[in-house]
Length: 258
Image (cartoon, rainbow, N blue to C red; front, side):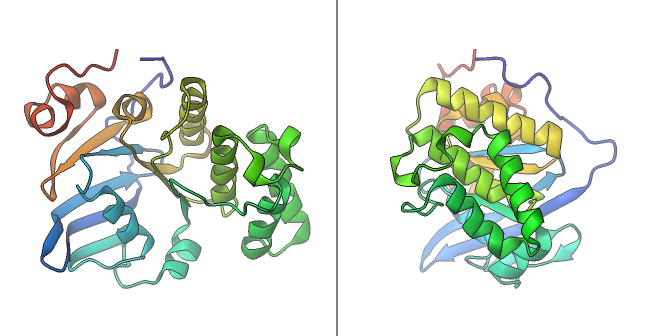
């Protein structure tokens, strides 16, 4: 395992809760997806979600953004019950950034035009718009592709662009859905460093959902295994891969991260 993360946050002396799911349950028709699931994300913490297909990882993201509502339970931002708040309120008031597995950009617009289009919605002042765009172009080393249409970018370039777009609104919480999928090793390492830098420099609370378990465990503080509608195991990466239930449900006996 590459040394991407030099430290992991195991506890917070003064924890500031950004997001909490309390005893959340969700079914689609007769199929139960989540059953009494609770989780919490503090400022400056990176949480990883792992689990087999259909375990409910994407459902958790949809509940957080407000795309769907839970059948039972509460969703809190800070100490505010926001279970019934619509998407636009959650995005504006609670500063949620979302990086989807696919898309998240306008194919026919250049890198700069993509950032400008979203900045015009989120930032009122023109000078502030331009300042923020140039800052993100510099931060993510996008200057050499600023005038290239997004449809012609590589997978890693597109992912950097979408993360930059998600940061235009200064999010407190960043959701990354399958961010390592279909990328080469060097690009994955680049994204891992970006994620850890966002934690240390911006103190953003980050949730990563991915099937690339080794890549995810390299850069998170805490991870959870979802299986059979519940969180069956959670802890630091080292704790998790030694957890018997996690091995039985997800990792198997031979999985290692170094």
